[in-house]
Image 1 (cartoon, one colour):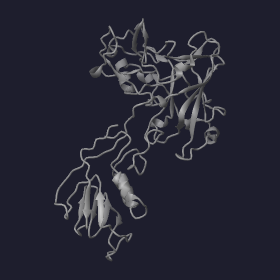
Image 2 (cartoon, rainbow, N blue to C red; image 1 turned 90 degrees about the horizontal axis):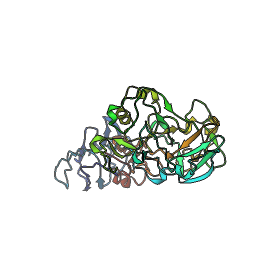
Image 3 (cartoon, rainbow, N blue to C red; image 1 turned 120 degrees about the vertical axis):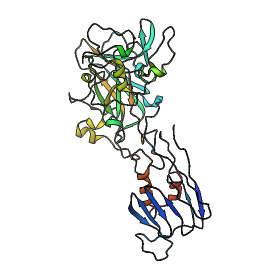
Image 4 (tube, helix red, strand yellow; image 1 turned 60 degrees about the vertical axis):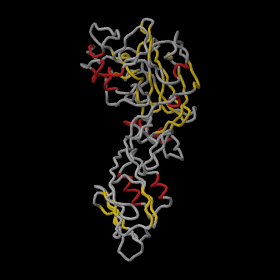
Length: 408
């Protein structure tokens, strides 16, 4: 967890002076007028019942503890005049992943008659970071996919694989691009021409074709493992298609030394499989770009094929039960089937729940009152508007600068 907080302004004022004034470019709270303004727009006025007209007549407490991100113009008594500038902006960043972000259990597997890669447990956990390259481990990249027996499981014609998460995978409004979960296979984008991938400098290899090796699998979801809702529309995503997996972040300045006998100059920390790619990306967008540039587009994302629960048929989506605590529809099981040619099969490496603030392991920060994944001045305005309506606001204000999501 990262939280950039150069100052925590905590000031207790007893027997508030009538001239007490807190000022900032965005807010003014003063006595005796008691006006509170956000961006120049009056929200509430407070007083001690002294007859000054107010929008809400309310008692201003004799003791207030302020923990606010403001520029203090002064606290006249009992504290001497001083100035503190507090820089605070909370911005949502991607969280680190953990085992529960991926499927934890194989419920059912029918290999469909394939001759190899028949261990369904290969689909548990995160997608592959490295794979075999002539007997040596090398990073999985969009032009060279994972293929080892313990990395992907094959599903032949008429076969299926059912996986379960440890938790509810929600249709979360804060999920990037609306992507709720990601399925990883071993699709890869061809380079084109006579160029072979040999783990050379990725900045020296340019992709010249939009041809991607895919083996599409039909994806369905369920809440109980019994009633299934499929992504049956042919225009919707399929498993083991674009985008290919990326195992490590391309970052020549922070290349890791984890490959014996090979001087790795380009590949850094592992990617985050809970961060989706922009679903508007297509193979043609990588044509004319180097492998390094493609991996730069991925950033920390591991790629994969993203799925949005709202892309289900409307009747199917409406059939999903709503979680009573979150108010969101959800699923907990994913099924992949292969219905293509009898000569081929689809592969699954992993499935991942997309991370965002407000999800099952990242509850909204105590101060994120409007649930926009940021603790900022908008929440300050909400706090002010609620001040005479709600109970326990002193505790809420005390937690206003707390953040249990990643913040800057």
